[in-house]
Length: 274
Image 1 (cartoon, rainbow, N blue to C red):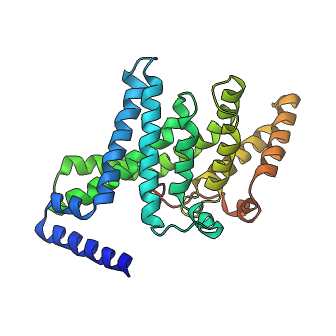
Image 2 (cartoon, rainbow, N blue to C red; image 1 turned 90 degrees about the vertical axis):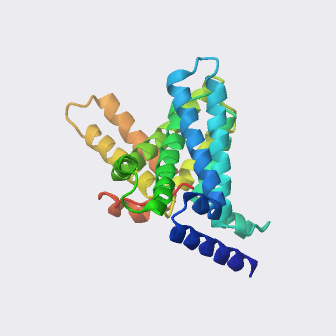
Image 3 (tube, rainbow, N blue to C red; image 1 turned 45 degrees about the vertical axis):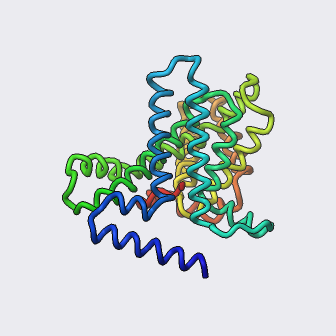
């Protein structure tokens, strides 16, 4: 009852903000959304600092702050999606179906690792997508034709969101062998590869974001085509074939049901991380 009452008050406050055309009223009505919006821009700022402007001595600091900020955003989003917490196995199973829970695990994994650029890319890309989406809702308070230059930039991001989703999924997949290599070099904890494998497992089974399955399928098709190429050396062909078999054995049961459906491009979706 209290949850429905709170939702009703929030809807009324949002409608009042639309009626008055006030961005500040909209932000006050969407306090959690506004907090996540601020943290996402902070993630973007930290990612830019890490990649372009910081020294080698400061990279770890910016990297960990970005992962921590992303973890806060994911926790807030998870609370929005599943507001009533219950300490039970079934409730944890429900939590682990949420994309925000997956990326909360992701942030915790890399908080204990040395800085790695490939791990920061999904955080930055999702932060950009969600920050632009919320910014559009904010400026809509002033009318659909307000802030034309800002809308043009937001529309450009939205137009390419399918490409960004694919880029994020590819980074997440390639990060798995990278984490294993980091363990060998002593730059990651012993549990990091196992936890990250579970993260990839959850992303593969995601109900709201199919791009991990799509990229896995496309990588498999590319590897199979290369292994069958007459110009491919026999050693490389054998290695590719064994790698395909090994990765297929590690795939969740969902793979067997979906392989036939993954040869087409999925339609663009709203960002589903947080």
